[in-house]
Length: 382
Length: 215
View (cartoon, rainbow over the protein chains, first blue to last red):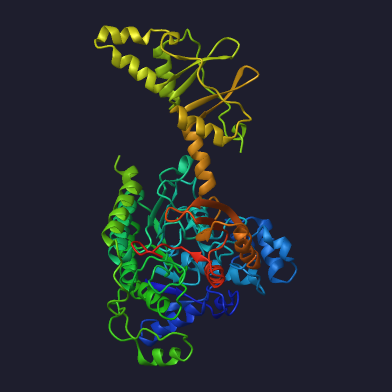
């Protein structure tokens, strides 16, 4: 069996709102090219995405909403009609064929699911997915269809497995959480910047699930300016505790790369260290608890030049048991993409040290995060 | 908002002839701290709180006395003629009553009968609903001068960006009487363009607060 498969189709780049929109899937090309330049990704590792059927999308979305998205992408929707579905806003503008483009991202994640659960590979990666804000009947936070919600329902229906969803995007994974809030067979774990200011505002430790699903929703809201050390401490303890408690059959990780200092939308002040460690522990625990069954998707990440390609490459190298790349980036990659990048690229896999001025009140922020962790996990220690 | 919109409408009650033991059982069963005491006509004649029950037991030193308390009718220890509220009271008025009278529960009475109950917990929930994020949104805090027309200038920018405003709160500024803090929740993941426009028009956007650094 192969270690890992990489889902990609050039048409995934069709999920594009505009040239100036922060959500830009050019990230996929930049990452693939970087992986190819270091010899870590070969053509035989790549499987194409597919367009998810309406029936599949309807596993997690309202058919009326799917219809609205189709109409919007075909120029048959007025601004007024789209409004209550979150379509045609500054976050989620209408673009041509938006249904087809969104359905392809969903289908990509379904391809990754089938690759792993049909035993073609131990792990699979669809960086085009991870659109965790999509709601049952509404677009939100750049996300039209929620590929992870659809994929989890698909896993339940087709394979009947217990799924752990892990979300390390800097924004709370609200869409996925609410999809499975009542479901005791799906556990959601989200680590994110506190919603005090940041979108979507939810993800408090007190959101633990509802009814039968109480105790299968975990949230770890971090303070702004958390930095690597505290982030990783919380991540490690949260992951170990929740894996041990829930004992999933399969794990789906959402790998938003927007907790980095350079990211324009968030304030966690992470560095490349967290992107090195996040897949490492997910990989280890997937082997310990799920016989290796690990599906990973992308997510946020709005510094597409300096952060995302390096961060996402490390998921793939980890999946393939390759050493985490260090030192300088390939010269060819730097020279080629520097021509397009509006900012100077970071020439090494590691970030420059120091990356930013020391944060005042660091000790207090760490203390606050540690207290949050206790609160979030206390339900398991009863 | 008026009390009627947020009060609990199905209320657990007891009669003055019920015992302290029955009251403790009811409190434990339903995880409640307050029981209005009504007569046969559902008129409020008293109230009993967890606090009153605990004190009744604490006042009895020996086991015999404690056993006797359980069988005491509520009439003997309840607060008679408690402060009550009306369904049309403003929620703010209920809050003021709680604060000034140092109480934690208000039976709501209309036409002489008990129609509902408001506790501090209900009030806190209403507060959470007002200030919290019930729909996906970003929050922006802006320090503005305390003068007419400011909110209009701000909301003009929101309108230009076609962004839906979910809530607006205006707080006093702890640093200066001449300013106020406007805190808005916007239904948008990327507020950067809005923040930039606000700053360009001279608004002091406080979000996010760098810890320890005065903005």
